Length: 248
Image 1: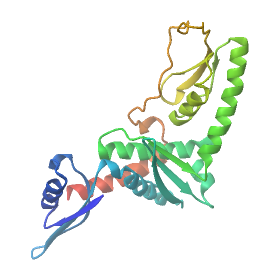
Image 2 (image 1 turned 120 degrees about the vertical axis):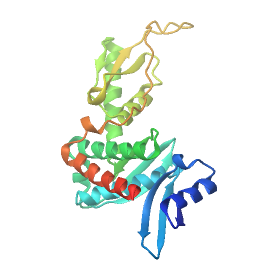
Image 3 (image 1 turned 45 degrees about the vertical axis):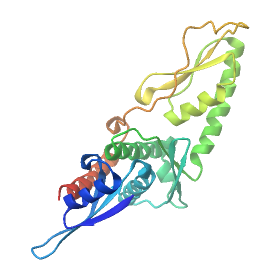
Image 4 (image 1 turned 30 degrees about the vertical axis):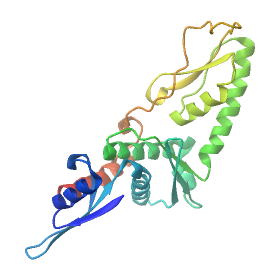
């Protein structure tokens, strides 16, 4: 993330393009300040690179939380190709998590959508607060292992309740070493869930089932179906501010 000063936004973009050795239309930026007086003109822009996704995610999330009247400390960690946005809060943790984690999931989609709009590409981002996600993974993995044992014993396929992509990934990884168990993600949107199937492995041969495990793939953010009107209005409010500054 770098700042560039010039007399106009266009001149600042030209300076950024020259220094970063990229075409001007590929630059992702925000207007920090702009003066269009008769005797004085100045402009300052902040330019974001793809490596700055964490900084942008933190700034965007801070704006959302402030608009909602919530407070949390935010830290960023890049690990295994995922931008981990970790929050800590003593007073508002429960409100940020929401019932069954719904609010946290909605915030995650908001941030992911904002990153997609800003950088023009899919960014894997995961929001967590007070270790909530880690505790949930432990519970889901323990449940999945119990169900997998039942499937292995009865050979009856089991279907789990819908989960978010990161939760499904945790279950896939937890059961991947069981040679008689296969996990598949099926369905779409909020209904996407995991099935746990028995696989009969014959020594020296491939598994008898023709189906293969499906790797979790991040899809383009679709905030319209996962976020209630309150969150959507806040997103439009903040996004509208960004666009107004860029059009000045």
